[in-house]
Length: 88
Image (tube, rainbow, N blue to C red):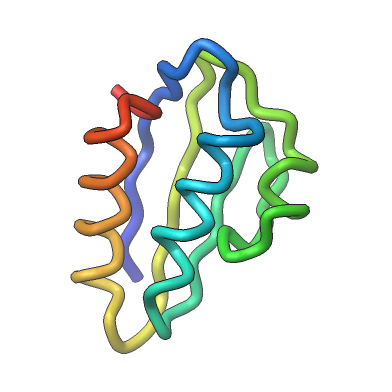
C-alpha cells in the first residue's frame, strides 16, 4: 500500500473540473485508489464519490493506492494533480 497526504490548492477545491482530472488519473490503473478527507474515504475512480466529499481549497487529503501497480499509480496521480495545480 502506498499513501500520500497533500494539500488542495485549487481555488474551487476538489470540485467539478479538478475532481474530473483526479478521477481520470486514478482510473488509468488497476489497483484500488481511495481518497480520504475528514475521516471519510471513497473510491477515487468514482466522480460521485469524490464530489460527495466536498473538499474545499486549503484542505488536506490522503490518497491511497493498493494493488499490483500501486507504485506507478501513486506517482502518476500525484504528478498529474501537481501539474494541473490542484495540489501543492
